[in-house]
Structures are given as structure tokens and as C-alpha cells.
Length: 177
Figure 1 (tube, one colour):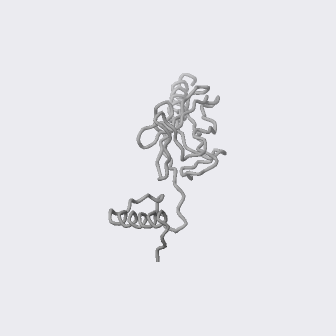
Figure 2 (figure 1 turned 180 degrees about the vertical axis):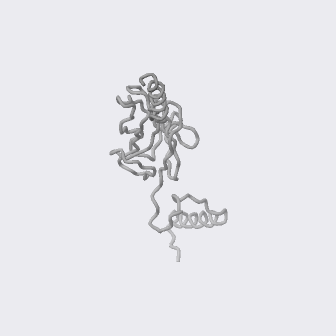
Figure 3 (figure 1 turned 45 degrees about the vertical axis):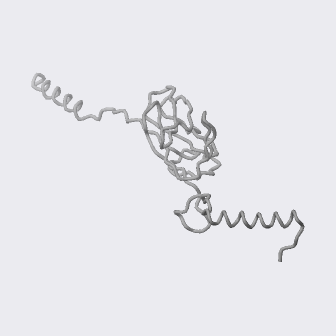
């Protein structure tokens, strides 16, 4: 009877090994967050907190480089952090406030329009977040920052003529009625 049970036991062991769940390492994931690690994908341009990044699924105790890339491919922020023993990226400040001032080798660029930014970790794109310009008090959510407009040539000529008349009157001390 023992010899008949051995093939049955081997079959049961083989089935248990096949059916048993295997430990599959999760793909790495990274997301933007607030300072508490809560996922956050939209930041106000004047946000005092900055953009934090958190993630998981990386090799334990490994140095990784986190970069924030704008839509033109420019690196606007970069920081290196070591993953913890579980392979997680702790809540890390990747782009400190203010979010509207970007300094590059060519100078400082002020951003006043909504922009999407990608999070790269060791060169791999993981997530996208949005930095928004606060809405104007007009109530129009689609309004953008005011833009300077150049007056038409006729308007400029009229303004110069008026300025010239006032300057001439002042210099000659005559009254204009």
C-alpha cells in the first residue's frame, strides 16, 4: 500500500507547487504627492509646500535619481534618494516651492501658464502632474495671465501729439483751455 501512495503523494506535491502562488515582484511605481505621501496630481503655481514624490517596487537600499521634466524636456528639479529596505522611495521633496520660478543656465524663466511635468526616476518616466496658474477673480476658469498689448500706430501718434502739446505748453508756460 505504501508503494501505491508514493505516486499519489508526488502528484499532490507537484500540484501544490504549480498551484501555490509565486512571489512576483511588483513593477516600480512613482507618483507625485503632498508632504504626507497622499497622491496629488495638481499643484497650484504658488503652492507653499512644493512637489513631493513617493514610490515603491525598487531594489532595496539603492540610490535613485528623481528628476522633474517640463514639456520641453528641460530638467526643472533633480534629487537623489536612497530607497528603504523594502525598495520604497520615502516621501521626498523633489521640487521645492515656489513652483513658478525656474532658473537655468540661460537665466530665470517665470511660468504663468498651466504646465504638465513628468517624473523620471533613473531615466524612466513614471507619472505626470500638473502645475496650474490660479484662476482670475473674473470667474472665467479658462482665463490666463494678462498679456501686454501694443496700441495701434494711430493711437500711438495721437498720444505722442497730446504729450508734445502738453510739453510745449509747460515749457512755454502758456495755459491750455
